[in-house]
Image (cartoon, rainbow, N blue to C red; front, side):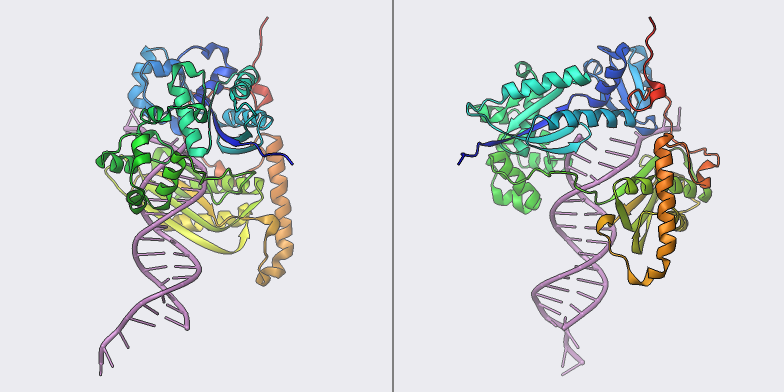
Length: 428
DNA sequence: TCTGGGGTCCTAGGACCC
DNA sequence: TCTGGGGTCCTAGGACCC
């Protein structure tokens, strides 16, 4: 019989992920200030360390910063999600080889579990994956190690804040952890957002140590079970488990802000139709089907007009069929349209998702089985052609009319790792 | 002029039932 | 005439995350 070793949890994330990806495929950008813009070239969502040093703010709208960025000679790029998704896949595949369990938490972050060796020292392990990631992907990662998820997040923050940490920090290997906890402001703790941190501050709670020492009943009364779990994890108890494997999605959303606000029903319907086609393909790629479809639209958060509507439709049979979904979405779009408002954003949601491998078919529709089969084959063919020809092969006529409202992506980098035609060329 | 997108979890309260 | 209260299920919306 073996004595089971103590399991440690690490939170591994990539530093300035989007900016690092761009710098990794384009040598000219290395060691230069780089910022990445959100969809629609709206605001700044990632900065290289060099850009950070210039005090360029995260989340700041691009149009306000444009001039200054120009003056400072900062490279500005639209976000290139196919590049980031591909780099993410490579990163996660690498991590998988060096841990026992992995929960991919976001595009640039993963919780992993690893048992502590006899001498308890995980620094050599951490240094190894950090070096490998840099060598193979050109990306720097930070590793925070502790006993549970919340503390691993704290450790990761400390690894970033402490100069001599070299990107690795093991909270369980530190004696004077209170002094570290006093350095962590409450609003930097995972799970504490703006509302909660305002409340805590009004109670005189400013840092992680004070939160740990706060009366449990008071936290539970205000923050419920979520707050209670958070406090217990900070104290070192294990409340949150590692979600293993590919947990299937509960909903799929496709939504965008418009480049220019729209007022015509035609445009709204067209936009929603395009999003519905995307969402349907996304569902099929994950073997999911929807039984509840929602659409929504709204005016800009920053305009004087305030209008927001959504409409829903429940389905008797779950479906992933674009034709079926399009019909519903087009009908729903009429319900949320209002000609008096300048609409700035719209989207579709596929909810009540079920995995079609376990799907129940309603008996009423039995006689339509043949039609459904035919339709399924058609969808499969379209998906595979689009995969082969880079999403340009087949689509629905409604998407082809001229669009005045489409999003701006004026500063896109090349899709070097996912499109063979865009591979970097070397001139000798 | 121009301010992202896509998720999850939890809770309060309404509808309905007996 | 007086008209309870507990349980369940569902939904909208809040809060948070990256």
